Picture 1 (spheres, rainbow, N blue to C red):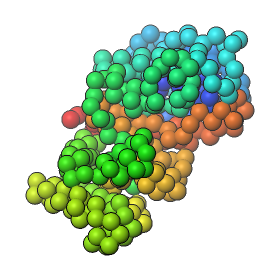
Picture 2 (picture 1 turned 30 degrees about the vertical axis):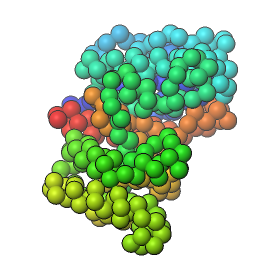
Picture 3 (picture 1 turned 180 degrees about the vertical axis):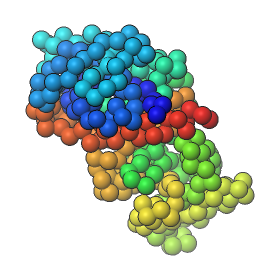
Length: 333
């Protein structure tokens, strides 16, 4: 089997990123399905193995072709940018925020150069980024800038449920204001193209309603009638198989059951709650419309348990495996 090279930036060194990385790479499935390359700091990974009571071999490499992709070996591009004596586990630190950014930047450079087939990211901390004078609020914004991409699409996947988002990190009031015919029409087209690039052809997508019962024809709000229905009609006229607006209290359930290939959520929490209630650990984030495929765990740095070895690696494992599954299809397009 031709396995894909998956780049894994280590994440915030003070958080659980290093621990979930070493735990994930101890799972034999990872190397059976992919060729994982960690971009991080050797001393931090060694410390994480102590926390997790693991004994893996770290092989420092310069190029991905030098790696030994067998279970029990961590192939590492060592940035050597953490002073382990000064690192305070579980705390916001400028050094850690800057290091986390450096890992993402290096992984992006490798992916843009065609050395990696996909990226599977670990948690970073917004406060640590700010302390390190890194003026971004998250991975998506960093990758958008580093790759000169416009408004990347976020998609969550948990089992068979795929959820796109019309808006991300804005207030609820601001998100409601963004439910316009033109924005929705644009996003429907982009979501359908993203599904096609992931190998899901002739997809059927549902658009979630904004108001209770999708507004009941204007009784509980008129956004569905005024903005959403015209956008969906225009998409149908282009030949796109899009339905809705479907009330948000049922659309995600039917998406999970296979009635739709994807659901377009209208704001952050609408889709986050739906997916995470299905399975918090197996909800994986995929960033579309970048030059390369990016998957991610969908949890934070968990400073409260960092350094204890308690952090579960299920989400990290799933993120790597999903990247390996989609990468061949994504890179063919």
